[in-house]
Image (cartoon, rainbow, N blue to C red; front, top):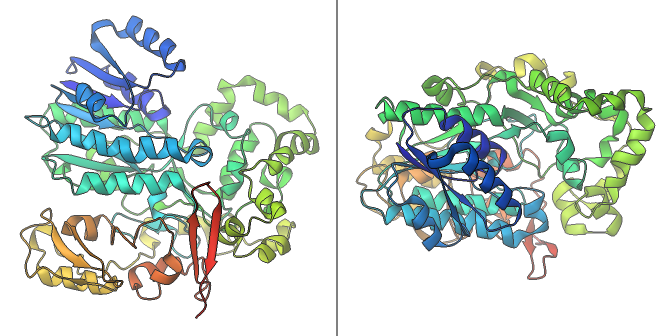
Length: 510
């Protein structure tokens, strides 16, 4: 097989490249590296190691010409490139070029080939937006409610939708969850991003190593002709119960290797109360059943990180208050820290993150005042993580019917549940576009699969920007059932970002 990959300088991509090249069925892999100087060394290293089995294209992923050069003559494309937080927070333009424009350019390049290579698009759990103890489990088809001011998720949402309705011959979308990598702790002590993590956010961790192994298994089984049923579907990449945690015990796991814990190093009011993202995947077992890739558990992986970085053990010799003072408290002043927003009176981001500036200022610093999923304050924690006990969202149609049996009546039911209607009088199949109308009167074309199984809705008002879910949820039961888990029904804010990057929260009066 001949394969093209993007994102191979990242954690998942590096593992996917390394492990895929272990397969004898792979003739070569062609990769895209941006022209940044830091990639010069990587290019030389890869060329020395893999010789004729690696081909390197240099250029911007936002260029369709570059993308065509990448995918020409290949059998399979794996698009993993992404600008992720905190880089996407600091540089929204870079996020747009890679996560949005890059996805469009890649899809167009694939579509221009004859025959078309098969295409795997790596999306993200961030599309689902904020979750808490009320609906910690999610699945493909759930509403996509990108958290306000999350540029990364906003751009990835657009890129995924473009892929779904572009009319490619053969594709698969994989929504990646939170990903463990060897440099996790080091990478998260230089930015206020860590304080965006809500303590009760359900997080399902998967390792970069297992994510790379998944790509290898897809290549292996595709070469053997064993996975025809895999294609033209959306999946969630997770690790199962052994990867399920919350924000609180994720901090405990990470800080344990330097002799601390969330409660030793943090105050609860340092952290976001909402406006994060994360899920436990109800349907994460679908990929596992196909490819058997879930090997690493979150607790074991953190211990592995500790063993790989012996210097972390020195933290156990330092008093916790000193680590707190010199490592974490300094980050409270970082421009990307929620407490900095509160201190500076950044009302828009404070409202999105805490409900209001007043709520943020009144939030207790005492751990005893904070209810935690991980401590059993909402029920037995172990039982909560069993998929058998999951409380699922309604998708607004009869999900017992296979998509081959969908009719226009199913589309009408789904549209009504979203506050809209179907304009088309009939439908051809799950992948041929029909015309819909949202509650605001916008007409748009989208495939039944994109709406019912993708969770996408109106591309004008149902996607950011602006982030208008307070208003939309009033007439869209599909959104309301999860939006009101962490938002009051009378909030009525419309979140925007102006041309200079300033955040705004405009309140509407009833």
